[in-house]
Length: 140
Image 1 (cartoon, rainbow, N blue to C red):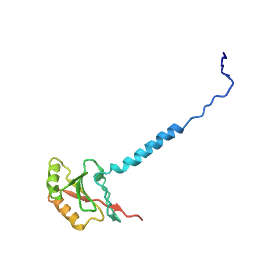
Image 2: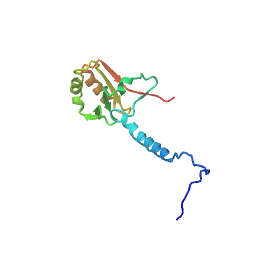
Image 3: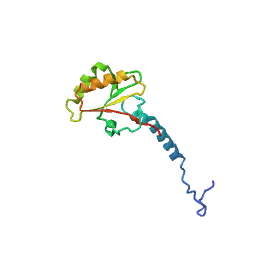
Image 4: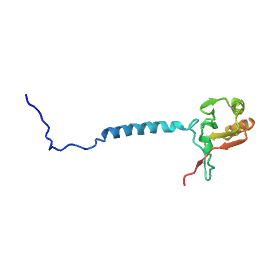
């Protein structure tokens, strides 16, 4: 039987192995890339582009009342598709105990004008104090 002894004079490998760390970081990057588009409330719509949009940071809050209209003219309240005739009543119920009576409208740029006007009329008949129309900045 041979006895193995360690040679105290030999060099110790002190290199850091970063391969596992890189693997973990790539997995986290992929997870964030997949989840980030899901963080926007409401359905995905292509907003109208304007030269000087007014920033409305309140629209990104979880407590914001958001009405969206997609390119087919379907109306969404938050993330749920609703019947446009029920929008006024739903807004009145949601705003009954709120001091902030602001509603934001997110309409697809390809939506028919009539659908947007009808939704705005329904929102205004729910006694909303402020109505925000969300747009995007045109690329320069």
